[in-house]
Length: 146
Image (cartoon, rainbow, N blue to C red):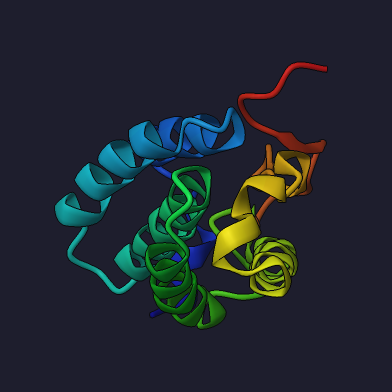
């Protein structure tokens, strides 16, 4: 991956996927980010794939599928690490840390108690309004009320 790719703003389709992720629409974000990932030929496509896989981990938790969630956490987090701390204005380091906390809590609960996992622990993706080459105006969550 080149620094130039991370200095760019995310494409509208990627932002749509992030908004869906932040609203907890994990199956929809998968479809959207998969389209963005398939359309991108450069290494930054791994960022999109990593986000969609972490979102799928949350979807699998909602379905009570710990093996599926664990597999998606491992794949997604591995992909995201090469884009930390930030890429395309996305706070990748924060997403990794937040997703690891959920993964660890799900692991602590175990497959039989996944339904007890507090869904408010599911992270939101932080995206800066300005590109990383500009002075940031604000930082916030896309697709969230409040």
